Image (cartoon, rainbow, N blue to C red):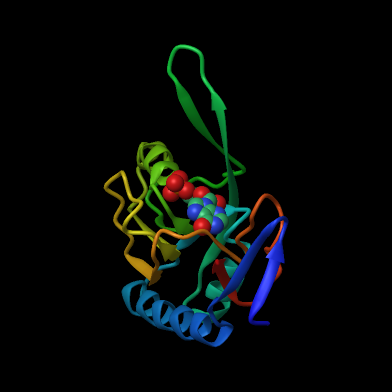
Length: 176
Ligand code: IMP
């Protein structure tokens, strides 16, 4: 499909499923090399990363574990905005962690959860992201495994939503 409509917005095809698969395979091969003698723990951040995570974990050849978490943000009283990680029931001390994120936009989400994860003394912690918007970044987030740098336009599909809709598309679309 060349164009789609999600809520009131029109979107056009931006990145095809074939291009996505190529990049997912590329970073999977890098991960295979970098974690050759380890059993990393992937931590996929829901909801947006669920399709990317399922493709990535099936593309790596190493033995790996995967855990799914959610970041809930709420207004704190004295401390301002807090982000809480829900669902991480695994002990990550001394583990090699690879966070799976759908998109690094401002970097705010990862900037909040990285210190929390580092506090638990993993052996290493890296980020795998489907998309990054370099023009929107506000925090120093280093993405070790990035599939695509994209312009600062809103995108949907392949797990990413616009107000709850659009996650099911196999390709990625951007606003017209
Ligand atoms: P950040 O904390 O600003 O880096 O934003 C990260 C989250 O915002 C992502 O995990 C997405 O859920 C959401 N997000 C940012 N940009 C987009 C977009 O273009 N489409 C859909 N979701 C987005």
